[in-house]
Image 1 (cartoon, helix red, strand yellow):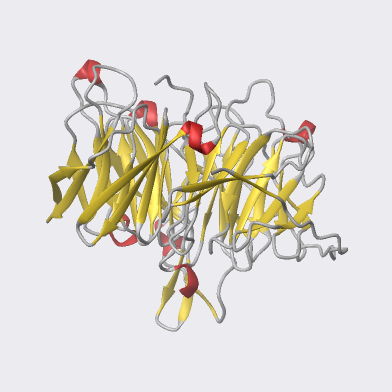
Image 2 (cartoon, helix red, strand yellow):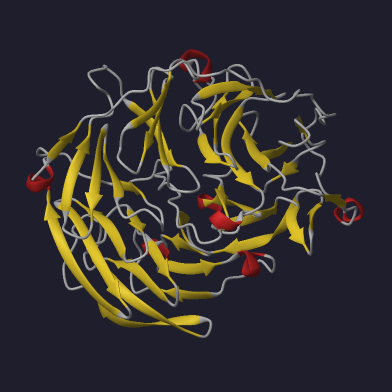
Length: 452
């Protein structure tokens, strides 16, 4: 049974505190110099406390292939930029938070950026961000983080007889621009893979075209995988996935597929759209998930559903509370304690995942008029990442050339980080805290404008 969830709104006044002084560091106006020369890369600065991290920011200017880095401790852009081979289709953070991956789907490659922050014995080393290498494969698209692993899914190219591939990555493997293990699949399709230790759940398509409808079970053997079974229920039109400690969930055109892991045994249940409360033409196609969160968050357009995998129950989150708004973007915080929603009028809503009550409603967090990309731009209207300790939401504001910063726990805008260019995609690179080391968090599935 579907249950409508009513949310408790916090009306207490929230304090507004500005960020520590944000000063512009000398930024190379040409956008062509490297952020990390060989000499700079070995010039260590030892910090006595944890670093708040760095934002890796793609520019909307020109070809869109320039990356800039904003150091949150210095409150300034680091000098220069990193020139990618091609404009990135997204930016993703590695499981251990040190690296940022810049997939370039049309170029069949992923460039790896070392954010330059890492623990060294009893202190933090800070070096210049720099390229750490390149991963290659046909049409890299969906990227999923689960604990200390990530699975990168390459869609392949049927026209060129290039099958889909899966690479499982860790921060240790990314230091060498390599994977822990990889596998070429039996078909080329727009799919996804969920890493679960030495198991990978990967999609499979039997039809000549369209989205996949099956989930295969692969077991790691050294640097590759052996298929050891197929989940016994189909998931037609499969798109979107998420995982927690015991379950993985997949979006189907006719409902959701919930897969339970007990050791190396997998069982499945299917919840149809009618039971969820979806009308014809609606479906759940993406998820937010976290290792320590027992529920999943499913998205069907502007409708948001809380999924209980133990019993297959689904509740709709009444996040709009009567407002005429649409959902622009969404994310969980690094601990899975807050769900963060940005709507199309620039309001940010923060929900406690313990009881799904509204923790904060930050009105006018960002101006949708200035946040809109310029006429020559492309991609989503606002890029949002949620990161750091304590957690902050960082929102790209292309029109005002800045990053808006919102403190989640306090539910207030702290200020804006000034840039010298209009920002596009964002990623956070920093230090994985003890609390985060085993976090299984959802990196959102991106369509990148291609057809299914």
